[in-house]
Length: 318
Image (cartoon, rainbow, N blue to C red; front, side, top):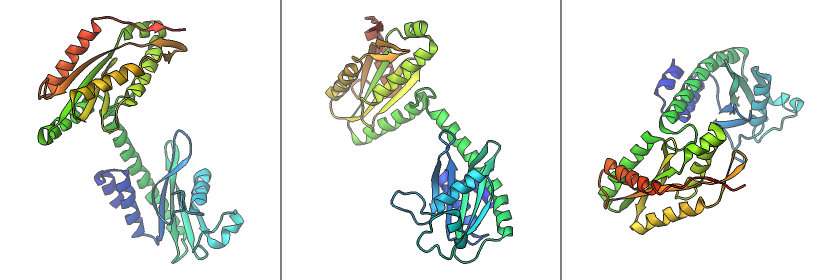
């Protein structure tokens, strides 16, 4: 019941793991506690929560890491004591000569997603303890999967699936925050509205996979042209917007525009072809071009379309 409450009340997975630790510590002897999660992509273990001695690499001290792998690959609960460690060819850590471990796999419908590992120096774990931790692990898996789902849904609501950039909703939130900050503290904000020239031609010539590849490449180049404190977002289609915060002069925005144009002078490798990709960029400044989100976006959008009217199209450089 406590873990179920935590699954609904914890703000994130880190808080959830901590509550799981506190709950299990009320049921079983626990000196050290670790949650290991297997990456679905690589199969490797990560350790998002651990309450035990760490080595210089930041990974769990031996033998904890080795025991986690043993439980993971065996997909079965395991109990260990110090005497059994040499037989398992596992190294003993400092202070482990009188210690006991209990590990259970975190099993879901998709397979084993991780491991819960406990260490006790007070008393050995019993079969009853193992059964209890197995029962608790089912609740833990449900809670973890629910939190992971919420995290994925939140990301989907805030970020563009194709490029990984903030989407329109996330961008508007950041713009509102940036405008509130400069109204309070002074300064300038710049918006760059970026549109690819003749993107439809790329789609028609190289297919939608080629178009998707181009959008991802454009997102990567734009991101490398700005500071970490700035925002590059995809509004939809081939339209991107760059939010430059805390700039001192209008010239700062022009320098970023020049940097973006210089970056896109280098041809892009799309669908095994080298393409010159043209950009149309419209700029709006706060407070010169307006003091509201809608005004700034419209001004930047209008100026972008003026640039786009001059034409330009990708050229095959092969």
